[in-house]
Length: 462
Picture 1 (cartoon, rainbow, N blue to C red):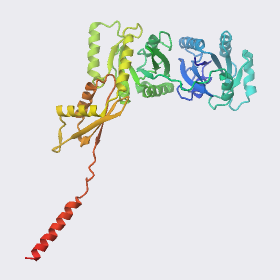
Picture 2 (picture 1 turned 90 degrees about the vertical axis):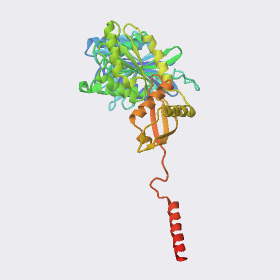
Picture 3 (picture 1 turned 90 degrees about the horizontal axis):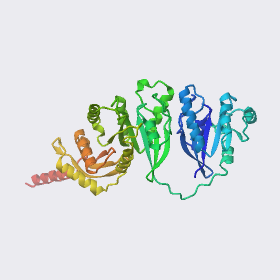
Picture 4 (picture 1 turned 60 degrees about the vertical axis):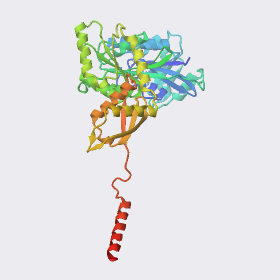
């Protein structure tokens, strides 16, 4: 088993900065704003060929008591999972009553606890750590997580008993699934339902999730990475600086995922913001599953109206499977993984050049493209140009003049005949260049000159 290190402490002591430093990523949001991290964030790290997992937790002691209670619960979960604990305190702010409370809790657990005095850049280490010796921990380290000071000695000590990474270790493919949607549509509730535990903070207030949280999960021998993203609301409502960061993280998570689950609130149906987010997912080329949440409790005429509305407004996403679920009660949730696998398989399908070329010929024979300036558009052959999303490259003449309506016909027909479900298909058109374009036919000119000389010779001899 890979060792786990949990980062705990009060808000704004630098846990997320240290998380990013240890994992070599920017996965955890960092800002001079207390209470930014609210859920457990997992990351892979390695030091001197010794791998370990870092768990970033929300700070204990934010102003909102309801949120603070939930965040404290998340920290307790992290402590239960951890093999070692990094207890972070702020070397510039000094000792606080909240630090004493956290220390009291940590002394009760039977695990190694390392007291990390952060933000000592520019300070004497012995002076900065002196005040915190009263907390009763023997392992005290002064560091600067933002500048890297003191990190190496700390990791040398902590990771010494960790096992060295085994070479040639074979890892199975992990499917990354991003859960996207507006705030308060039930993304965190759905993930908790899938995992069977209160893994991410759920609170009846839009915007509770602020960071993109990655959670490893395994089902039927297939490994997944579930990414709970912050809800994206209308731009005019994005007031907090932190929420603007969250939107960026959400869009990054969509880009890095292989499958996106777009969640829609059945009680509000589709909004313009839903359509914008869907457009971004499709434009990014991600495999897509649409889940209509809060389906339980609706009347039959309401359900029929919602289905009709979805069919009318989602014409641009007809390739995607639509599931009607209740994240709170679990109905329909089990079918989602079948859709995930189907969408992922379609996005990574391999097709041969003869296969797509024959299909192109059949589609053109069935419905030929229109004439352009009296000339026929010729499509000669096609081949696969990429995967996830699948890309088909079509070669021919005058393809730049191909109408959009005909491109849509080809896209829809390819999707149907290749049985692509849950993934968008991209078509690229490449016209052949005429090497003699804008060049005079020199051979014809010479022939004309020779003919003229011959005519003159004939006239002189008469």
